[in-house]
Amino acid sequence: MAREASERTENKTNWRVLLVEDDVPVRNRLARILEGWDQGSLIAACGTLFDAKQVIERETVDLLITDLRLPDGTGIEAIRRLKDISPDAEAMVISVLADQRTVLDAIEAGAAGYLHKDAYAIDLLEAVKDLLAGRSPISSSIARLLVRRLAGHETHDGTPDAPSDLTVREMEILNHIARGLTYEEIAARLEISRNTVPVHIRNIYRKLSVNNRSQAVFEARERGILPR
Image (cartoon, rainbow, N blue to C red; front, side, top):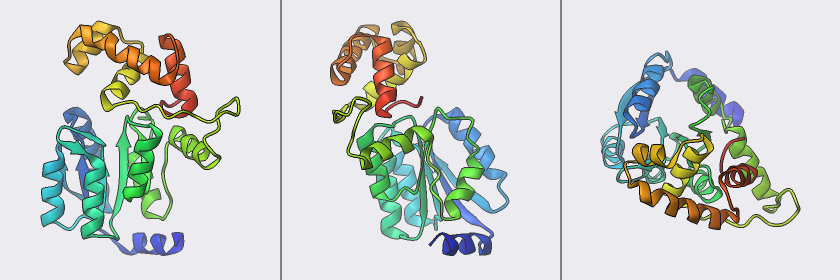
């Protein structure tokens, strides 16, 4: 299978790429990288699920690179629609979301690669080349999560991992907590009331069975929800 994929990559000179990312600066940066790829052409860079589906419906897409959290849905829906229309097309996720359920849903939908958005030391084009060569570029934190899943969800003490069930908003706040942001800074970045931030944080603590920020970050990293 890897050999067939490698031969297909070598024989193809123009991969038609669709990029889906709602964060404008990130989208522009990734678009510039893809525009410099001599084996592909960026046919569209979208910020919403609706626009992505429009492109998928009317254009031939060989490779979808998508974020998961979009203003009007998820990148998983874009992957599913692409696979419905073009089963041989490839899909890769770049997202801050790294909880077990989300990762598994994306892979089950057809994603062959999954990169954590915080891992910006990654070389996007190298990841794309790996994917098209039949490999599965996956960030180390995601790989650990999948290994633990296959091993029976065991934690460091041998007990099963309880599902975190974190919402998208809670995942966003957890990522900001890990970066050391204050309540005010988190509220400003997410454009929400400062008073709602501690409510979300209490829910995060409850779901992770912890009592403070440092414990939350440690537990999330142990579970593979956050990268180490």
